Length: 139
Ligand code: NI
Image (cartoon, rainbow, N blue to C red; front, side, top):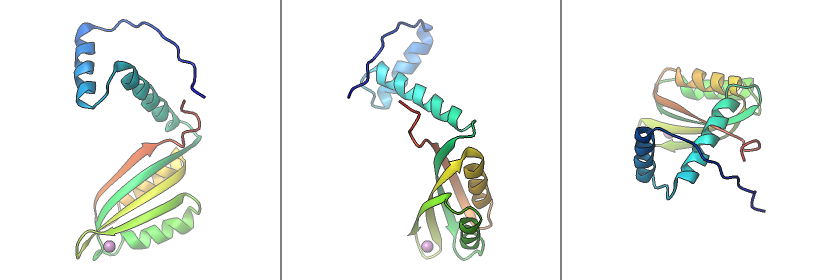
């Protein structure tokens, strides 16, 4: 069932609105309403990450598999935080470089801690955590 929508008017400085319109046009939004709804959801997700509830994040790591570190740490963390690392995918990029994609679920504090621990491992060339939501409290 489609949720009932409320309409409201807001006043925004012209320059700010122009820049916003320009930005959303380049992002493929067909109208302001959808762009504003997405911004509000982003804001709510950011708030979730400041709280103690459950969140989910995806961590992307690119590392040199010849350097001992990441693989060992990954195994170690999966034992230390059972249930938090819910899925992983490994891609062999070339003869030395690997990409690991991890889905990590739990409190924001735990997810960040697990991600930081992996990102700071020896051999990691790049690590990026995308903060996401389990969706339950985001309309
Ligand atoms: Ni590999």
